[in-house]
Length: 410
Image 1 (tube, rainbow, N blue to C red):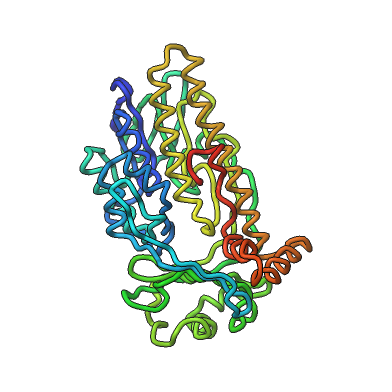
Image 2 (image 1 turned 90 degrees about the vertical axis):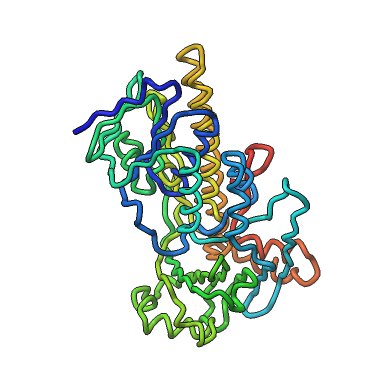
């Protein structure tokens, strides 16, 4: 087994994981002048199925441009900005708003772009290649150990040493597991079914639509959200639903035919299920302040509200700043303080995102009497009081983080 020591380089960091957050982390570190190496378990040619993280917010685009100037424009060109959002309750339209995508200059970004995660990764890989970031493929990490001097990472091929490491290796993070950092939180008991449809031209690509209690789906909630080249259906199952049957070929057709035109049912590209996670690591750094966790290695949020990738991009930015400052610190206490600031800032943001996800879950599942009363009151007032209609539209996604406490919405 080879030994590779990059800890002697002036500002060396190893990023574990070449998913979207890992690639963004590498670009952020590089933009601050750090020397970066990325290690990834999967093969370079592996393509993750499904749309997955498909929504990039305005704040994330601004950060991407700061990390590598051409990126935001590339995402705008490849992505999709839907023109309208609508919310229905039992088949009745209760809220509708047109979204302006006009950009008033090179410094103005669209409110968001929507595209499949595979396309996001492709753009980020191209940016890493153009900036000289080296990615080592097919090297699953076996252990991560830190001490006062730096980090030791063992893969199936070599042992690596560096001053710092970023764990961006996802929900089953080997980095987090090696450091014995636990995840804290819970997952909702209900299941959601997500389905990707691929089609260049369809009526479902023009607007984001949410249905409370869809009358043709036996009162289930459903979200339809467009992305570049298609759209996604997200169905909230009832507690007693037979999910396995509902995602079978026969089961899908039985309920999708009440939602999607027959001519598009053959355009299904991907089917999956998930639960509403509200989980945060008990600490985002190791005891020696040499390893930092970002993205799903540090927290798990539901797709509603687009908190996953967008919060991971914010993690990457704050982590890169923290490591840069730590590297030039004049004392060990100041060095650790820089890393602690990252831990406090991003863990606080993650906890707030969990609370927002919980609010979203309460809005769509109404588990308590107060949640039911709030929903009914908003519905009754929606015709005469516009803030009630706006609340109905926004509630399924939860509130954004307050700008006074955090630099981004996530």
